[in-house]
Amino acid sequence: MKPSDSKQAEHSPPPHRKLCRDCGVDTIDRGAWNYYMVHNDLWDVAGVNRDMLCLGCFAHRLGRPLEASDFTLAPINNTNPLISALRRAREADRD
Ligand SMILES: [Zn+2]
Image (cartoon, rainbow, N blue to C red; front, top):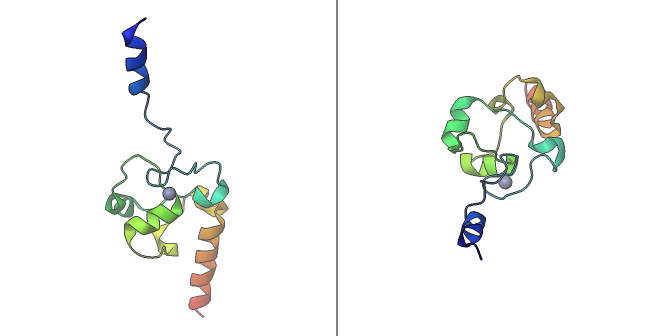
């Protein structure tokens, strides 16, 4: 019997960074919806530092619905269906 074996299990490595910090959903497995990049000041408001949040949990932390202007022009946002919908809605509002 080696006591050090059980000690190691108690100190398993932190969860993978692709998991939502709040709900634990795998943001990669859930498809493009949870790939996104927002402006740094918003990320600071949400207080997640270098962790990941799914979009739902991010909006919850912000305390308001997400807006098209929350997202940067990074190419990663162009493949996200939710961001595309927000951008289309904003365009429609301008008419
Ligand atoms: Zn989440």
